Amino acid sequence: MSSTAEQMRNWTGPAIFSFGFRPFFLGAAAWAAVAMTLWIFMLAGVLDLPTRFDPVSWHAHEFLFGYLAAVVAGFILTAVPNWTGRLPIVGWPLAALFALWLAGRLAVLCGGNFPALSVAMVDLAMPVALFAAIGREIIRGRNWRNLPVLAMIGVFAVGNGVFHWNAAQGDYAAQGAGLRIGLGAVIMMIAVIGGRIVPSFTRNWLVRQAPGRLPVPPMQRFDKASLLLLLVALVAWVLAPLAVLTAGLLIAAGLAQAIRLSRWAGERTLAEPLLWILHLAFAFVPLGAVAVGVSVLWPDLLSAAGAQHLWMAGAVGLMTLAVMSRATLGHTGQELTAGWGTLAVYLCMLVATLVRLVAALWPEGAEPLLHLAGLAWLGAFGGFAALYGPAMLRARPAR
Image 1: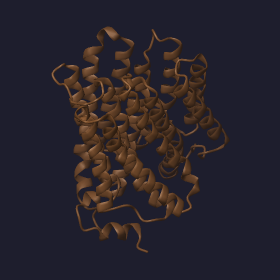
Image 2: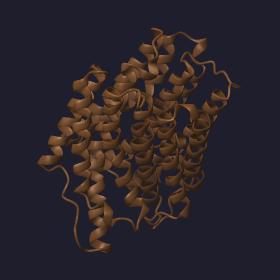
Image 3: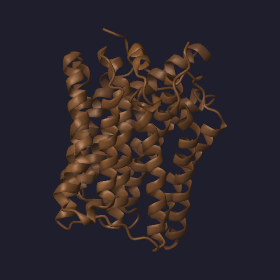
Image 4: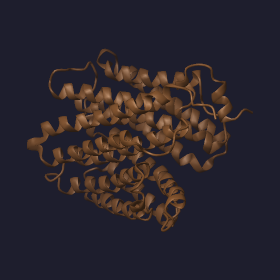
């Protein structure tokens, strides 16, 4: 059997289909920028999309189930060969999977011209195919340790299906059960996978660069207990989002995740943006949990949508940019360090997150703040595509 490297070298087609992260990371960043541009025009009242969703629900869907589905696909397709020891999906099968994702974006964008069921089926084709492909690799590779990751991908796809169902029923899908299921699944992915890679990457760098206090190894008893608490809180949020008990569970889970993060020596990583951005992004998991809990208890202080943006823009936006930049540098043969351009991308995403939070806390001045957050978002994802796109479009240099 050929190795992963040999499998990639044997591919003679476009370099972008030589490994999973290439089409999906670049496609995700480009779509995040395009979708935000369309959203800004919609906010200004100069554009009306032919989608079946209301404007806010389309905006929420295309970040959570459009952009993020591509990032998850790129990450998982790149990581699974390392997890299982099996060959990666490359070439035309990878191109076909990417084409399914593109078809989903087009179907949702123009869905007002087609039956709701057909739009949902086209949009769900890629996540279902991804679930089947990754499930096959994990089972054949007997990589039982990562079955929970497969389960979270499955729950994420179910959330997308429920989102379509909510919209077809005439509900406000942007605050429906489908969004909560999908967002909850992604927050658990960050808590589980981030809980492995953040302390591991930090330990590896500190051992070489700055001997001293090291992160506590991942997945100790406290980590597992805090993950279980987070899972219970998220399930409660999906089933009873306005319950006082749900608010208490979310706040408790957020505090537990904050303690977990404090054990990873993040304060010692300030010299390397590729590392401190991982810690900062993970910090939005507990911040978002506490904020969502607060929005339940004191809705006049903070809206549910504003609180959720700490998860969606902060935890998801920052963490995906951090993972995409690190993975692209490593898999395209570049030095694992962040330059000024990458730092600017991170800062733009942070500005977008914080400005969106201020807009939620200050509704009277929200309109210009929303436009500013959108422009900062464009700087983050447009900047990522401009910085990293060329490397993803060309073959990795031979050693």
